[in-house]
Length: 212
Image 1: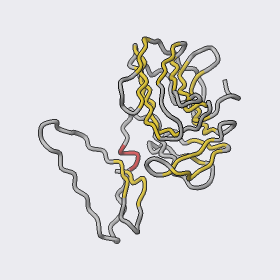
Image 2: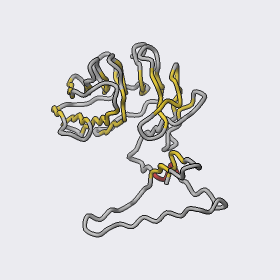
Image 3: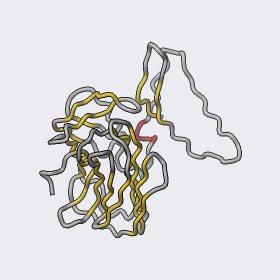
Image 4: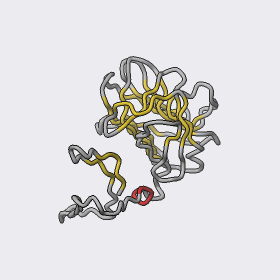
């Protein structure tokens, strides 16, 4: 398990738990041990996320420029980002819409499937969310537009979904090797057939205007 947040005054805890098997017929029991302040911390954040997770960022950092990856593989560096902003689950990062970004290593290389997901709250403005894409239309990026709509680009193909501004939305982009999909708040996705070639570039969360 990985503890994302804990409030000692209220006892509220938010944790990610790896359950290897869930049965759709028989209930799966989860046990929680608590109330012993002398108990050892048995967290294993990297063990929660298997090898299919290339990068997991809770954006809970309160200071500095390091943005940690829970898988332990792809930490990032924040530039002009406000840390410890109010978030949907725990913390969040606030981007200024001009030159705020988190720079990660190259995440995608030869993968022919992907899932990119995030909780996003935008104002009435345009901006990038996540991108690993060059100016030759190779790769992927997710962006938002004024009025609250989102788009996912996979190579030269694009998908759109409309939403609202100044509220949290769960946005998910997927690709299965043939079809790209864009989900908004778990509704019916927009879909399009697509092909995919990954460029050898860093992955950027936020503004990418100065990057190829």
